[in-house]
Length: 415
Image (cartoon, rainbow, N blue to C red; front, side):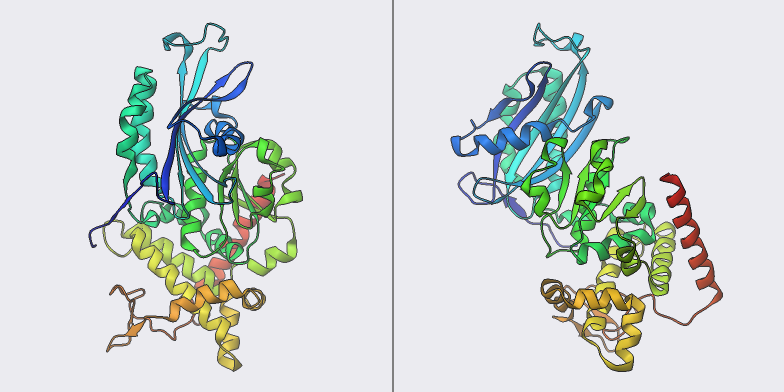
């Protein structure tokens, strides 16, 4: 792998580190921004108090000693803003600067990094922020934050898709991972719920899936109850994460699918049929899972390898969208005829899929070589179509039965 570049966050640049802040909870005043460096500008005051304060302490945070929250919204000028918050809960008796009015046994604090830009360095920023939050809580000294602000302006620009573990998503969701990617391509609004676990895992899953399907609208890895009627949520056409149970009670009013505890529910049965896995999808996922489980220390089965196979999947989808005649019918069947028809109506998605046919060469033996020189799927060429295509077999029957059994279990678990 080549050396990874660095992005410098200069406060005068459009993509920049904006604020380093501390959010706390006051028993009578609620969420508060207790510290911010540099000082909040007047133009940012409204969105900082409206979004950062409640997002810094996620719903149900009191149930966990520590958590990390990733979030997104737009500022007053409609520019994308991203944030990472490292949350800690400590015993109030051990907190030397505790407010004498505090009546709770625990104090909740969150150190938040707020930046601006369309491509946030999520995991890199979180890795830098966590030890800072730990030091701040331990020493209870804001000077710790003053001292590290400048060092945070330079964050290693490691490609985030390599840090967001898609293999974990595959292991947890199996065939539902492809279903979620199909929903993402169609611009369907999907709610992820995480009320029993820290929000970090849910946020990471959303961002990993989002990184696999670029070029679409902004996802919201986490929202609070106070954002239920917010225009940012209403306008989102993608993945949204939440931990407040009230969202689950009304999810059909705002969302088209719900993800909770690896189960996937649909508000509309016709949409479920549209994105359900085909036989080729089941073969493809089965092969990916077996390879990832057996080859964790090699290229095959690695995070980069898995993403290269998904790129191959999207290349085949491009061919299905563009093809016609008998061969085109076979390709469309492999991905789902109805699904391909719906994708064909979305100009933005078609343009994005078309990019998979650019800068691609074939080696002398017919293998597909990407512009970066890495074989996307050894043994397959540009005209291969769906990577799971093949002749029917007894193994297909087993895969289909297992898929239906998991679907029934998920159905009964939600009653």
